[in-house]
Image 1 (cartoon, rainbow, N blue to C red):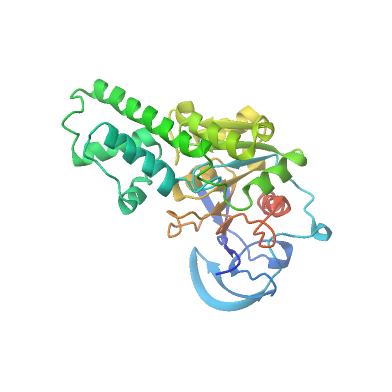
Image 2: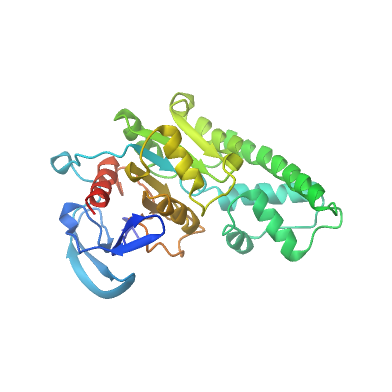
Length: 321
């Protein structure tokens, strides 16, 4: 379906772990109290109003595009724009990480293959090393795997190191492109003095390769990367987002996060941040009721889903609340 699917909860985040109901807000003032199906040329859409986290009734609402013109520009800009990597910058999981895991398993003759459906379930576990460990603990360790816990940690680390090398080769060959709108939004943020960072559970080298090869070295120098084992607990724990805010010298409440998964959304909201979800191939059916807005992608002209001004308006609503 052409156009974006955008929705927001009938609740606004007030503090980590606590959700409070919000009063209905007008679409014209850029709040997103209803799920809306945008078309490129028509302002009349059919959507669902949210009440207490559930879709209550179907109705027509009149709204403008989520990307606002300068006449309604937000007076507030985020202090920082924080992006998840896999599924947000690039839809890497199915044809990137999964393939690299399987190639690694084949090289080591482990007799393991992760198909698309299984990998989708494994993505509920944050971190590649954690994902492999959980899988082997549940299904049984390969015959040629070590027997002690400490040796198994080293074994998993070696598998993940090799998998990262294979994944980076895919990135360097530019076989996995940036998702629509990513480069546009990052360039817009940097041009207006908004700090930009990438916060991911993936290996730091893999994330750095994506940023450097796909956004270019000049932009990569301006983007901080928080990835891998930089924090002791991975998403859905908020640690990585809180570390990013602290390092950047900004308040969490002034940050807007772009995520694609439920565990990433939980991490962002638990950190006290505004969060926009751009669904990816593996996360389309996940529960995003606590998100501030949900789209199918960020979008490029002529089908822009949202811009920096839209992020600012979302932030204004949160700050007022």
